Length: 51
Image (tube, rainbow, N blue to C red; front, top):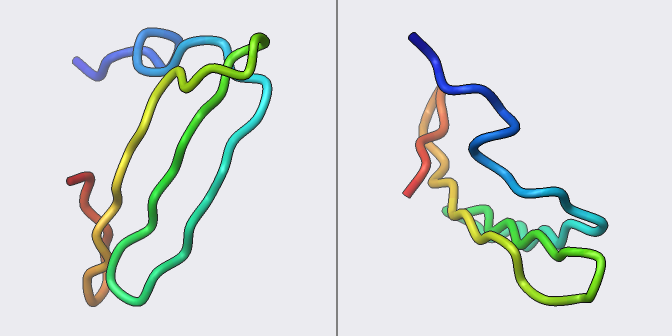
């Protein structure tokens, strides 16, 4: 059973994306401008994995 998206991410008002050579960094901010979540996604040949 897959978790629901609502449970993985809080309510976000802005998302920052840093596109690097090997890793994407995602930062989500709430309505107050505080960091609500961070994720790093590593690039792979035909897929990406959350780090």
